[in-house]
Length: 90
Image 1 (cartoon, rainbow, N blue to C red):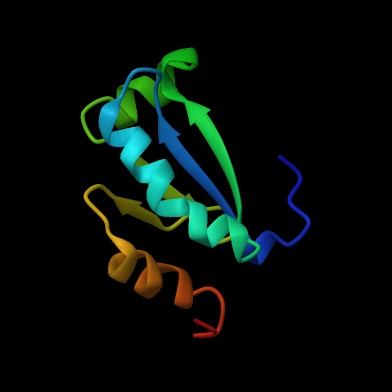
Image 2: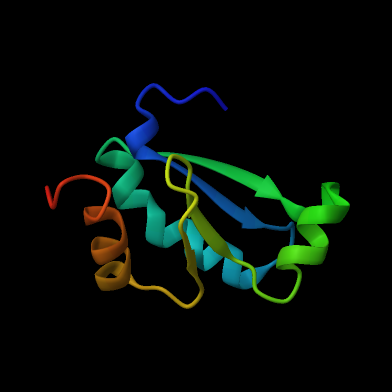
């Protein structure tokens, strides 16, 4: 992914058929509407990602800082996490 604005680029690690991953995607929809870019990465397609995240998905990663937010997260947790990278704009 080549984000338009690296400050607002995220990766959501998950896998197909993961109910919690679907819930995480839903939590991110308002942030996508606000200009954040989210790349969905299926960990099943990469052995290293599978080894790292298989027991913890979904995991949200801020691309520029590599900081991660693990599940469970709600809108309040997302607000705190994302404000750290966007100057507290929200």
